[in-house]
Image (cartoon, rainbow, N blue to C red):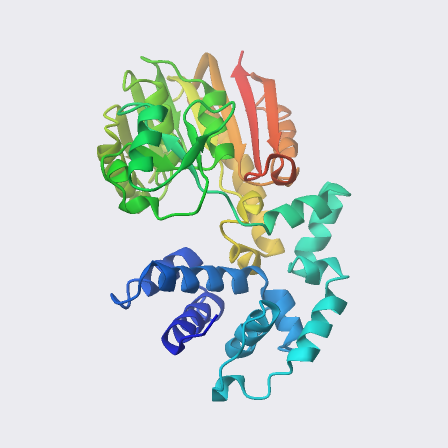
Length: 402
């Protein structure tokens, strides 16, 4: 492979924004990839894949490059040089790569690969936490979270069927295969940009991981019910709930961030989801108005996101022990407050995209032992392991109000 200056510099510039300015990788790349209209799919693919690769393996590459601790500002061209050498790519004769010790890089890689925190490229505190909470499972889970995520679609049953969607995508050169146990799920056989397809523009599908699709099915809403998605965000699960309700009944999508609900409205229009009503949680009144009025409530709680590191590898460099303490407090507060919206005999589903017991089953046990939780019983729970499933890590607990 021959390295092109404009693509390498665009990659390094993206890394600067992610590492040194603290910006989100997906947003940075969205902006970078629009920079030059002359770039083809292969050029954009190189920038995106290389950037994500270096973000994912930052600690390992920084250690090999002798760039110091992973949270200091490493020399980004040195990180790129390490990436290229390990990929077997010949470095061009540019000043930025002068004196790169290729043999030493390979030797350091072999040496550091024997130590988990370097091999899997993870901060010390997070490695210690994972070992403490998951024990022997941590090795396998961490390795799985460093693999490339599959591209999974959820058919929008309000507009089409899975077979019609497969046919439509195939006509545009995108091949898929159906997922077992997920009636609306399709997995791409090869990575492709699905957002330019007619099917996407017509609202026939959403990109949604297989684990995430299980959430709405576990809540199992029925047409005509009043369902609340209490931490809706941009609405991936809200749209799925709406489809399962066949657009009948009322789906109230709530969030503390109004801008996310604006995006949800746009997506709902494209999906043809007409029973979705958005409500901004700007005070406790938004919750009080719905006390004892919902048949089903989904709490897709804010969390560390450790189960989705494959998709958001930059988040492991932004997490901190302090954030984990704060988010566990927030999760418990949300459970105690939002659970009041469930009517007698109704269901509450608590879900996270974390694999840590302290964010998952331990939170449910703590809630059930509280004054607010004593009126609920645990019906069932499901833990999705990235290592076992091949998909994102998720936790779900279905509770019923007595």
